[in-house]
Image (cartoon, rainbow, N blue to C red; front, side, top):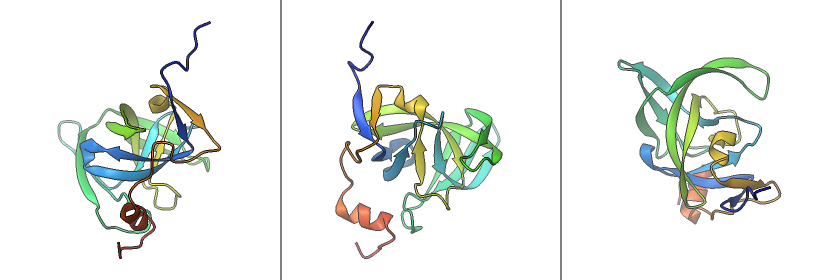
Length: 158
């Protein structure tokens, strides 16, 4: 049997990633093997003609600093069941994300994650592109600079 881990990188249960297509250089994510697709905190979601969507992203947990407006093609629409059992239809976009120094394409649902601990979840579809998860470790791809980490905690004095 072939070793499926030959070309894999190990990531922790939480990592810092970037979303270059959205102009988001840093966002702290939860790596979630229980979720099929990835999920991004988005608000002011507006469907546009030509099957496009415009939305805003706040990369920091307790701050609206560095919020960006993004526009993408709609890839799909799906009914998604949250961890609390609530179902909702979500818009799905394809986003490139850089995790552990590698760029992968991720099917990403847009939803309000204001009450969640992380602004983004990275799901199985993205992880199966060459990653294994060590649930006992964090930030194996490196940490964001200190000023970025402070902004993520809502400390704007960085």
